[in-house]
Image (tube, rainbow over all chains, first blue to last red; front, top):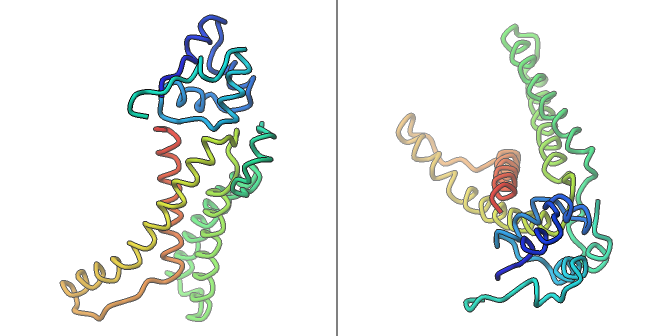
Length: 66
Length: 147
């Protein structure tokens, strides 16, 4: 799954730590999601998208092999 | 810091409070220190054979309790990724314990055959638990870094 969290963070000039603190997870969790090593739960995906004020589909994009 | 909605809808593992990590470390280090003192007392014949048995048993139990506290204490931020890692590590620890239980007596038999030709031994519960807890911690920290 491709994720655009990094892009959205860059638009807002945010660090992984800022985002992690805002949604209540660790910085390593954000790093793992961005690096596609961890797939977030529905709740966490919704929280991230709500934080960036975009839809889940705009920030998480399925790959062909997903 | 915790995600209340996630905790409410996903009943994760019940872990000990974070302070138990420190308690676990203190117990393990204390046990190591006491073991050194135990061997010093042993070398000076200060303990009876009954005393050696009981002190040895208590030291091993203290080590197990310390390792358990350390293993199951909450992380600084206990989020869903940590719970996911715990689940993976727990299942791998069970698999490891089963393989270890089956394979170890045969490995010991092989070694004994070479050295003394003794009969097959079974594992003690303490041996198994300590090895499984070591495996759990090794896997937990390596997955926490990698995943």
